[in-house]
Image (tube, rainbow, N blue to C red; front, side, top):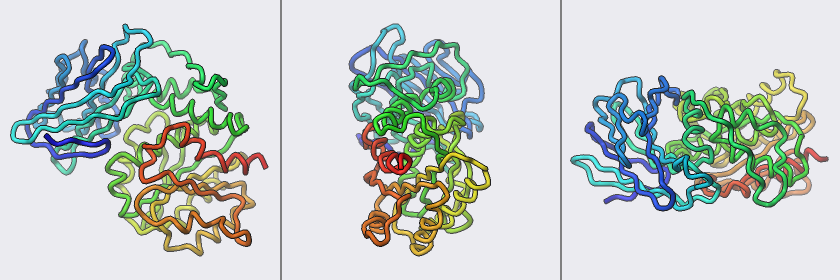
Length: 400
Protein backbone atom coordinates (compact mmCIF):
# COMPACT_ATOMS: atom_id res chain seq x y z
CA UNK A 1 0.00 0.00 0.00
CA UNK A 2 1.37 3.41 -0.95
CA UNK A 3 1.14 6.23 1.57
CA UNK A 4 0.28 9.73 0.37
CA UNK A 5 1.48 12.81 2.20
CA UNK A 6 -0.46 16.05 2.38
CA UNK A 7 -0.41 17.76 -1.03
CA UNK A 8 0.73 14.68 -2.96
CA UNK A 9 -1.24 13.20 -5.85
CA UNK A 10 -1.36 9.96 -7.78
CA UNK A 11 -2.99 8.79 -10.99
CA UNK A 12 -6.17 6.71 -11.22
CA UNK A 13 -7.59 4.42 -13.87
CA UNK A 14 -10.84 4.93 -15.74
CA UNK A 15 -12.83 2.74 -13.37
CA UNK A 16 -14.83 3.08 -10.15
CA UNK A 17 -12.73 4.22 -7.20
CA UNK A 18 -13.59 3.59 -3.55
CA UNK A 19 -12.61 6.04 -0.82
CA UNK A 20 -13.13 4.70 2.68
CA UNK A 21 -12.78 6.78 5.83
CA UNK A 22 -11.92 5.68 9.34
CA UNK A 23 -11.92 8.07 12.28
CA UNK A 24 -11.27 8.03 16.00
CA UNK A 25 -13.13 10.19 18.49
CA UNK A 26 -16.57 11.71 17.88
CA UNK A 27 -19.04 10.23 15.40
CA UNK A 28 -18.57 11.62 11.91
CA UNK A 29 -20.41 11.87 8.59
CA UNK A 30 -18.78 11.34 5.21
CA UNK A 31 -19.84 13.36 2.17
CA UNK A 32 -18.75 14.18 -1.37
CA UNK A 33 -19.16 17.40 -3.35
CA UNK A 34 -19.27 17.47 -7.16
CA UNK A 35 -17.61 20.63 -8.48
CA UNK A 36 -17.52 22.34 -11.85
CA UNK A 37 -14.59 24.21 -13.47
CA UNK A 38 -15.22 27.24 -11.23
CA UNK A 39 -14.79 25.23 -8.04
CA UNK A 40 -18.52 25.50 -7.25
CA UNK A 41 -21.37 23.01 -7.41
CA UNK A 42 -23.58 23.05 -10.49
CA UNK A 43 -26.65 22.81 -8.24
CA UNK A 44 -27.45 22.08 -4.61
CA UNK A 45 -27.89 18.35 -5.36
CA UNK A 46 -24.14 18.11 -5.98
CA UNK A 47 -23.67 17.64 -2.24
CA UNK A 48 -23.79 13.86 -1.72
CA UNK A 49 -24.36 12.86 1.91
CA UNK A 50 -26.56 10.71 4.15
CA UNK A 51 -29.77 12.56 3.16
CA UNK A 52 -28.88 12.54 -0.56
CA UNK A 53 -26.61 9.52 -1.03
CA UNK A 54 -26.33 9.36 -4.86
CA UNK A 55 -25.69 11.99 -7.54
CA UNK A 56 -24.35 11.45 -11.08
CA UNK A 57 -22.54 8.17 -10.30
CA UNK A 58 -21.03 9.40 -7.03
CA UNK A 59 -22.46 7.72 -3.95
CA UNK A 60 -22.00 7.69 -0.19
CA UNK A 61 -22.68 4.55 1.85
CA UNK A 62 -21.70 4.75 5.48
CA UNK A 63 -18.02 5.70 5.57
CA UNK A 64 -17.28 5.04 1.89
CA UNK A 65 -17.53 7.28 -1.17
CA UNK A 66 -17.71 5.54 -4.54
CA UNK A 67 -17.05 7.48 -7.75
CA UNK A 68 -17.60 5.74 -11.09
CA UNK A 69 -15.04 7.90 -12.90
CA UNK A 70 -15.84 7.02 -16.56
CA UNK A 71 -19.50 7.87 -16.02
CA UNK A 72 -19.09 11.24 -14.30
CA UNK A 73 -20.63 14.07 -16.38
CA UNK A 74 -18.24 16.22 -18.39
CA UNK A 75 -19.20 19.26 -16.30
CA UNK A 76 -17.77 17.69 -13.14
CA UNK A 77 -14.10 18.65 -12.88
CA UNK A 78 -13.49 17.68 -9.25
CA UNK A 79 -15.02 15.63 -6.46
CA UNK A 80 -14.13 16.68 -2.92
CA UNK A 81 -14.34 14.09 -0.15
CA UNK A 82 -15.12 15.56 3.27
CA UNK A 83 -15.63 14.30 6.82
CA UNK A 84 -17.63 16.30 9.35
CA UNK A 85 -18.40 15.89 13.03
CA UNK A 86 -21.99 14.79 13.67
CA UNK A 87 -23.85 18.09 14.29
CA UNK A 88 -25.85 16.46 17.10
CA UNK A 89 -22.67 16.20 19.17
CA UNK A 90 -22.53 19.72 20.60
CA UNK A 91 -19.01 20.99 21.06
CA UNK A 92 -17.32 17.98 19.45
CA UNK A 93 -14.27 18.72 17.26
CA UNK A 94 -11.55 16.79 15.49
CA UNK A 95 -8.30 16.19 17.31
CA UNK A 96 -7.05 13.01 15.64
CA UNK A 97 -7.23 13.31 11.87
CA UNK A 98 -9.37 10.81 9.92
CA UNK A 99 -7.64 8.28 7.68
CA UNK A 100 -8.53 7.72 4.03
CA UNK A 101 -8.03 4.47 2.12
CA UNK A 102 -8.22 4.54 -1.68
CA UNK A 103 -8.83 1.34 -3.66
CA UNK A 104 -9.36 0.72 -7.35
CA UNK A 105 -9.18 -2.51 -9.33
CA UNK A 106 -5.84 -2.83 -11.08
CA UNK A 107 -3.96 -0.36 -8.88
CA UNK A 108 -2.20 -0.73 -5.52
CA UNK A 109 -4.21 0.59 -2.59
CA UNK A 110 -3.22 3.98 -1.19
CA UNK A 111 -3.78 5.65 2.16
CA UNK A 112 -3.59 9.15 3.58
CA UNK A 113 -3.70 10.47 7.12
CA UNK A 114 -3.77 14.23 7.56
CA UNK A 115 -1.83 15.91 10.38
CA UNK A 116 -3.75 16.10 13.65
CA UNK A 117 -5.88 19.17 14.28
CA UNK A 118 -5.67 21.67 17.13
CA UNK A 119 -7.88 24.64 16.12
CA UNK A 120 -11.40 23.35 16.76
CA UNK A 121 -11.94 21.88 13.29
CA UNK A 122 -15.35 20.35 12.72
CA UNK A 123 -14.98 19.41 9.05
CA UNK A 124 -12.05 18.12 7.02
CA UNK A 125 -11.59 17.95 3.24
CA UNK A 126 -9.55 14.77 3.03
CA UNK A 127 -8.98 14.48 -0.71
CA UNK A 128 -10.03 15.63 -4.16
CA UNK A 129 -10.51 13.62 -7.31
CA UNK A 130 -9.73 15.85 -10.30
CA UNK A 131 -9.40 15.69 -14.05
CA UNK A 132 -6.00 16.28 -15.63
CA UNK A 133 -5.49 15.97 -19.38
CA UNK A 134 -8.40 13.60 -19.86
CA UNK A 135 -7.39 11.35 -16.98
CA UNK A 136 -8.32 11.32 -13.30
CA UNK A 137 -5.99 11.84 -10.35
CA UNK A 138 -6.43 12.04 -6.60
CA UNK A 139 -4.80 14.63 -4.36
CA UNK A 140 -4.37 14.33 -0.58
CA UNK A 141 -5.70 17.59 0.88
CA UNK A 142 -6.17 17.28 4.65
CA UNK A 143 -7.55 20.80 5.15
CA UNK A 144 -9.61 21.35 8.30
CA UNK A 145 -12.20 24.09 8.97
CA UNK A 146 -14.21 25.11 12.01
CA UNK A 147 -17.42 25.78 10.05
CA UNK A 148 -19.02 22.31 9.96
CA UNK A 149 -20.59 20.67 6.93
CA UNK A 150 -23.08 23.52 6.49
CA UNK A 151 -20.27 26.07 6.31
CA UNK A 152 -18.29 23.98 3.87
CA UNK A 153 -21.36 23.50 1.69
CA UNK A 154 -21.92 27.25 1.60
CA UNK A 155 -18.28 27.74 0.63
CA UNK A 156 -18.83 25.47 -2.37
CA UNK A 157 -21.87 27.46 -3.49
CA UNK A 158 -24.60 25.30 -1.93
CA UNK A 159 -27.55 27.16 -0.41
CA UNK A 160 -28.19 25.96 3.13
CA UNK A 161 -30.27 27.32 5.98
CA UNK A 162 -27.95 27.59 8.93
CA UNK A 163 -27.61 30.00 11.81
CA UNK A 164 -24.17 31.59 12.00
CA UNK A 165 -22.11 30.28 14.87
CA UNK A 166 -21.00 32.75 17.54
CA UNK A 167 -17.35 33.74 17.45
CA UNK A 168 -15.31 31.77 19.98
CA UNK A 169 -13.17 33.63 22.48
CA UNK A 170 -9.49 34.05 21.77
CA UNK A 171 -7.42 31.18 23.22
CA UNK A 172 -5.23 33.82 24.88
CA UNK A 173 -8.21 35.29 26.73
CA UNK A 174 -7.86 38.61 24.86
CA UNK A 175 -10.75 39.85 22.76
CA UNK A 176 -10.54 38.98 19.07
CA UNK A 177 -10.29 42.48 17.62
CA UNK A 178 -10.76 42.17 13.88
CA UNK A 179 -10.62 45.50 12.08
CA UNK A 180 -13.89 44.81 10.27
CA UNK A 181 -17.02 42.86 11.02
CA UNK A 182 -16.21 39.28 10.04
CA UNK A 183 -19.87 38.49 9.45
CA UNK A 184 -19.11 38.94 5.75
CA UNK A 185 -16.47 36.21 5.94
CA UNK A 186 -18.81 33.96 7.90
CA UNK A 187 -21.52 34.47 5.31
CA UNK A 188 -19.47 34.23 2.11
CA UNK A 189 -16.45 32.09 3.06
CA UNK A 190 -16.93 30.32 6.39
CA UNK A 191 -13.88 28.17 5.67
CA UNK A 192 -11.75 31.30 6.08
CA UNK A 193 -13.29 32.37 9.36
CA UNK A 194 -10.67 30.72 11.60
CA UNK A 195 -7.64 32.19 9.76
CA UNK A 196 -9.39 35.58 9.55
CA UNK A 197 -9.72 35.56 13.35
CA UNK A 198 -6.06 34.58 13.70
CA UNK A 199 -5.07 37.43 11.39
CA UNK A 200 -7.27 39.84 13.35
CA UNK A 201 -5.63 38.79 16.60
CA UNK A 202 -2.18 39.39 15.09
CA UNK A 203 -3.24 42.94 14.21
CA UNK A 204 -4.52 43.45 17.76
CA UNK A 205 -1.24 42.16 19.19
CA UNK A 206 0.69 44.61 17.00
CA UNK A 207 -1.53 47.53 18.03
CA UNK A 208 -2.93 48.27 14.57
CA UNK A 209 -6.43 46.85 14.85
CA UNK A 210 -8.79 49.08 12.93
CA UNK A 211 -6.15 50.35 10.49
CA UNK A 212 -6.94 49.98 6.78
CA UNK A 213 -4.79 48.94 3.83
CA UNK A 214 -5.31 47.73 0.28
CA UNK A 215 -3.82 44.23 0.20
CA UNK A 216 -2.18 42.95 -2.99
CA UNK A 217 -0.64 39.56 -3.73
CA UNK A 218 2.17 38.85 -6.21
CA UNK A 219 2.89 35.19 -6.90
CA UNK A 220 6.10 33.80 -8.36
CA UNK A 221 5.33 31.76 -11.48
CA UNK A 222 8.86 30.56 -12.10
CA UNK A 223 9.08 26.96 -13.33
CA UNK A 224 10.66 25.81 -10.06
CA UNK A 225 7.36 26.67 -8.34
CA UNK A 226 5.35 24.13 -10.36
CA UNK A 227 5.29 21.49 -7.61
CA UNK A 228 4.05 24.03 -5.05
CA UNK A 229 1.19 25.06 -7.33
CA UNK A 230 0.34 21.42 -7.96
CA UNK A 231 0.34 20.57 -4.23
CA UNK A 232 -2.03 23.43 -3.32
CA UNK A 233 0.70 25.17 -1.27
CA UNK A 234 0.31 28.39 -3.25
CA UNK A 235 -3.50 28.16 -3.04
CA UNK A 236 -3.31 27.76 0.74
CA UNK A 237 -0.94 30.72 0.98
CA UNK A 238 -3.30 32.90 -1.07
CA UNK A 239 -6.21 31.91 1.18
CA UNK A 240 -4.28 33.06 4.23
CA UNK A 241 -3.52 36.41 2.59
CA UNK A 242 -7.19 36.78 1.67
CA UNK A 243 -8.13 36.12 5.31
CA UNK A 244 -5.72 38.88 6.38
CA UNK A 245 -7.22 41.21 3.79
CA UNK A 246 -10.66 40.70 5.34
CA UNK A 247 -9.28 42.48 8.42
CA UNK A 248 -7.66 45.34 6.53
CA UNK A 249 -9.83 45.92 3.48
CA UNK A 250 -13.54 45.13 3.69
CA UNK A 251 -14.22 44.59 -0.02
CA UNK A 252 -13.30 40.90 0.28
CA UNK A 253 -11.07 41.07 -2.80
CA UNK A 254 -7.30 40.79 -3.28
CA UNK A 255 -5.77 41.67 -6.68
CA UNK A 256 -3.35 38.89 -7.67
CA UNK A 257 -0.44 39.37 -10.06
CA UNK A 258 1.47 36.38 -11.44
CA UNK A 259 5.09 37.13 -12.29
CA UNK A 260 6.26 35.14 -15.29
CA UNK A 261 8.29 35.48 -18.45
CA UNK A 262 5.74 37.55 -20.29
CA UNK A 263 3.29 40.33 -19.46
CA UNK A 264 2.30 39.97 -15.78
CA UNK A 265 -1.14 38.43 -15.44
CA UNK A 266 -3.47 40.33 -13.09
CA UNK A 267 -6.70 38.88 -11.73
CA UNK A 268 -8.29 38.71 -8.29
CA UNK A 269 -9.22 36.29 -5.55
CA UNK A 270 -12.39 36.99 -3.56
CA UNK A 271 -14.29 35.62 -0.61
CA UNK A 272 -16.94 34.27 -2.96
CA UNK A 273 -14.58 32.55 -5.43
CA UNK A 274 -11.39 31.65 -3.57
CA UNK A 275 -11.73 27.85 -3.57
CA UNK A 276 -9.39 26.47 -6.22
CA UNK A 277 -8.99 29.97 -7.67
CA UNK A 278 -5.19 29.96 -7.89
CA UNK A 279 -5.21 26.62 -9.69
CA UNK A 280 -7.73 27.97 -12.19
CA UNK A 281 -5.75 31.15 -12.84
CA UNK A 282 -2.18 29.94 -12.96
CA UNK A 283 -2.86 27.54 -15.84
CA UNK A 284 -3.46 30.64 -17.98
CA UNK A 285 0.06 31.90 -17.29
CA UNK A 286 3.34 30.80 -18.89
CA UNK A 287 6.13 29.61 -16.64
CA UNK A 288 8.76 32.30 -16.33
CA UNK A 289 12.13 33.07 -14.81
CA UNK A 290 11.71 35.43 -11.89
CA UNK A 291 10.48 38.54 -13.70
CA UNK A 292 9.46 40.18 -10.43
CA UNK A 293 9.95 43.85 -11.34
CA UNK A 294 7.29 43.81 -14.07
CA UNK A 295 4.80 42.24 -11.67
CA UNK A 296 5.64 44.87 -9.05
CA UNK A 297 5.06 47.66 -11.56
CA UNK A 298 1.70 46.14 -12.51
CA UNK A 299 0.61 46.13 -8.86
CA UNK A 300 1.77 49.73 -8.32
CA UNK A 301 -0.06 50.92 -11.43
CA UNK A 302 -3.26 49.18 -10.32
CA UNK A 303 -3.01 50.76 -6.87
CA UNK A 304 -2.45 54.25 -8.24
CA UNK A 305 -5.21 53.94 -10.82
CA UNK A 306 -7.67 52.74 -8.17
CA UNK A 307 -7.57 56.10 -6.42
CA UNK A 308 -7.23 54.39 -3.03
CA UNK A 309 -6.37 56.65 -0.12
CA UNK A 310 -5.39 53.84 2.27
CA UNK A 311 -1.80 52.57 2.07
CA UNK A 312 -1.01 49.46 0.03
CA UNK A 313 0.31 46.27 1.61
CA UNK A 314 1.81 44.28 -1.28
CA UNK A 315 2.62 40.70 -0.27
CA UNK A 316 5.13 39.43 -2.82
CA UNK A 317 5.79 35.69 -2.76
CA UNK A 318 9.23 34.78 -4.10
CA UNK A 319 10.72 31.36 -4.70
CA UNK A 320 14.14 32.30 -6.10
CA UNK A 321 16.48 35.19 -6.83
CA UNK A 322 15.23 37.77 -9.37
CA UNK A 323 17.19 38.26 -12.56
CA UNK A 324 16.24 41.97 -12.57
CA UNK A 325 17.77 42.91 -9.19
CA UNK A 326 18.62 46.51 -10.08
CA UNK A 327 15.06 47.09 -11.31
CA UNK A 328 13.63 45.67 -8.09
CA UNK A 329 15.84 47.98 -5.99
CA UNK A 330 14.86 50.96 -8.11
CA UNK A 331 11.16 50.19 -7.69
CA UNK A 332 11.52 49.90 -3.94
CA UNK A 333 13.23 53.28 -3.77
CA UNK A 334 10.70 54.97 -6.05
CA UNK A 335 7.66 53.69 -4.15
CA UNK A 336 8.84 54.64 -0.66
CA UNK A 337 6.89 57.90 -0.85
CA UNK A 338 3.73 56.39 -2.37
CA UNK A 339 2.33 54.77 0.76
CA UNK A 340 3.32 51.26 -0.37
CA UNK A 341 4.75 48.61 1.93
CA UNK A 342 6.45 45.60 0.35
CA UNK A 343 6.62 42.27 2.17
CA UNK A 344 8.64 39.63 0.34
CA UNK A 345 7.57 36.18 1.53
CA UNK A 346 9.99 33.43 0.64
CA UNK A 347 9.05 29.82 0.21
CA UNK A 348 10.17 27.15 -2.19
CA UNK A 349 13.55 25.61 -2.99
CA UNK A 350 15.33 28.57 -4.61
CA UNK A 351 17.95 30.96 -3.27
CA UNK A 352 16.57 34.05 -1.54
CA UNK A 353 19.70 35.88 -0.38
CA UNK A 354 18.84 39.01 -2.39
CA UNK A 355 15.55 39.50 -0.54
CA UNK A 356 16.94 38.52 2.84
CA UNK A 357 19.72 41.09 2.53
CA UNK A 358 17.73 44.07 1.21
CA UNK A 359 18.00 45.77 4.59
CA UNK A 360 21.32 44.27 5.64
CA UNK A 361 23.26 47.42 4.82
CA UNK A 362 22.57 50.64 6.71
CA UNK A 363 23.56 52.64 3.63
CA UNK A 364 21.03 50.89 1.39
CA UNK A 365 18.08 50.16 3.66
CA UNK A 366 14.44 50.44 2.65
CA UNK A 367 12.01 51.69 5.28
CA UNK A 368 9.02 50.24 3.40
CA UNK A 369 10.41 46.74 2.79
CA UNK A 370 10.65 43.54 4.83
CA UNK A 371 11.32 39.85 4.25
CA UNK A 372 9.56 36.90 5.88
CA UNK A 373 10.88 33.37 5.44
CA UNK A 374 7.84 31.09 5.44
CA UNK A 375 9.94 27.90 5.06
CA UNK A 376 9.64 25.52 2.12
CA UNK A 377 5.92 25.13 2.71
CA UNK A 378 4.04 27.91 4.53
CA UNK A 379 1.13 25.57 5.18
CA UNK A 380 3.25 23.88 7.84
CA UNK A 381 3.59 27.14 9.81
CA UNK A 382 0.89 27.45 12.52
CA UNK A 383 -1.58 30.24 11.85
CA UNK A 384 -0.69 32.43 14.82
CA UNK A 385 3.04 32.33 14.00
CA UNK A 386 2.37 32.82 10.29
CA UNK A 387 0.32 35.99 10.78
CA UNK A 388 2.78 37.41 13.31
CA UNK A 389 5.52 37.05 10.69
CA UNK A 390 3.27 38.53 8.03
CA UNK A 391 2.26 41.71 9.88
CA UNK A 392 5.16 42.44 12.25
CA UNK A 393 7.21 44.75 9.99
CA UNK A 394 4.11 46.18 8.30
CA UNK A 395 2.77 47.18 11.72
CA UNK A 396 6.00 49.00 12.62
CA UNK A 397 5.90 50.84 9.28
CA UNK A 398 2.25 51.89 9.50
CA UNK A 399 2.60 53.06 13.11
CA UNK A 400 5.48 55.33 12.08
